[in-house]
Image 1 (spheres, rainbow, N blue to C red):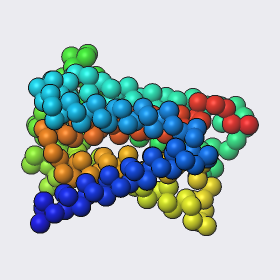
Image 2 (cartoon, rainbow, N blue to C red):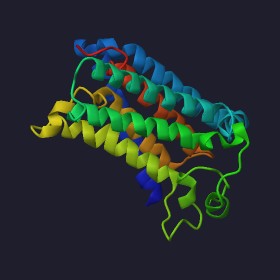
Image 3 (cartoon, rainbow, N blue to C red):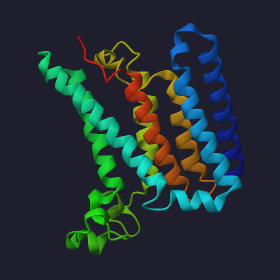
Image 4 (cartoon, rainbow, N blue to C red):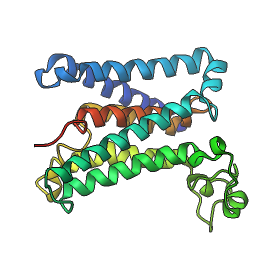
Length: 244
């Protein structure tokens, strides 16, 4: 049954990506996205080919404190800082901080900055500081980050794997939320801030790979790729430009 599910997910993923490329290369409204699609495609292909055909190099790069982790860190921290600068321009332009767009953007910025901090354990190994006893006792890696507190035996009986957090973020932010903003609801005002539809297959890819977990350290590769999707999304939605 598990193999059938993996085959179904793989087929669905391939069809979704084929649909994506058809839309990008044959629809005028998506032509401006071609360079971003190319960037994400190349990134995904390099990760997959390395994982299956050069597993030793792949594992080396995806291990803690190596390229995979730092790409994830920089992707998320750049995303968070770009949105923060955008929000500062919102203030200078006299726009209300209580608007739904401002709150959504602020929440996205905070999320990206927190993920970046969690990824490098808030600089624990860089600055060589000792985390509080709670993290030494409950964090199975003895790192100063919250997400690892819920691995292994968990904290206060709560167990949450990092892969499930990644899947939830990819589903709610990259799939469900963009769909909801297309409906005639108050969320419709966020339509231009949520990820574009052409990014949806990539979010699906992250969920599928986390679920299938075909090779070692798939989770680290998915976190890195999710960071790249977020970074493309931030540039895509013109967070780097002032709103008039």
